[in-house]
Length: 350
Image (cartoon, rainbow, N blue to C red; front, side, top):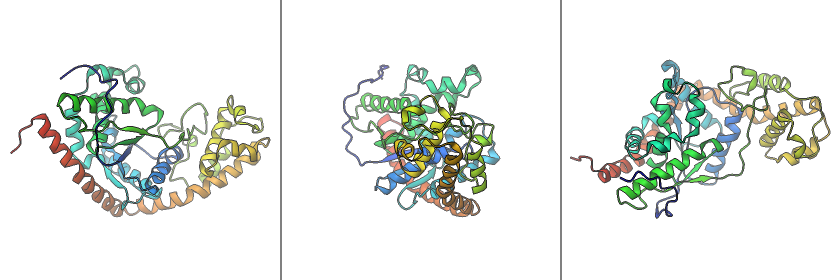
């Protein structure tokens, strides 16, 4: 094998079907940012007829400690959020990552294809491990290789990719190109492309417009959870941090006002409008008028999702049926790919 990174690989000769793959970690309650930035967009892709594979990333979740007693419940909650957001298990394959064992085996093979220098350049590990690199799990260091396995196991051709994951998709392309080259199988794996649906709304904390809305934030007031009831949503928006000035007439006027920008961004995403359109209606008006309108819109948009999530979570057997069916369908595609890989690599076969 060559140790060189295929930084400028030749165009792939892959001729297989179009497939889109993504996943969300099973590591805590989902919030409005997850809904607007991922779930809503997954549903839009599905509704265009795109073949979508959407998994609950429980293998990724355990790169940091997860309470085993909660992990199964968290997996079901992510699946419930998929379904409540409009994903149809008859049209999209929805499954738990760990239920398809080929993910882990292909990840090991790719660990032997990827180069240490490639992983050393991954900025997310540096950010997540901070000053405690030596105490971080090996899984946290190598999880971009598992991501590559997630994608290439289904020969996915497109991956919805946020800014924080672009580097990992480039690593996936490098691994695919190196495997194809080293084993003399051009075009065996596709070089997946980032899927662009226009800029995803960047939803920030309701308490700090400079920090992303996060399920790990210790303050529940910083986020709108997908399971929040109408009263909680209204209260959180009413208490959201703002400044004393009225909303500006133009988008440029939001640049130095992170909290105002965040609330306008949320309104625009929920209303399927641009920020320019929002400011044409609300520019010059104060938050005393804008916040109640935003709260009403958020409740109207999220109430059906919340109600369906709660219904599903009260019936875990229904969620389990969907996950089992999805795992069976995913395995039916993944196992033949892994079998081909085993043959290419030279593993013993009976």
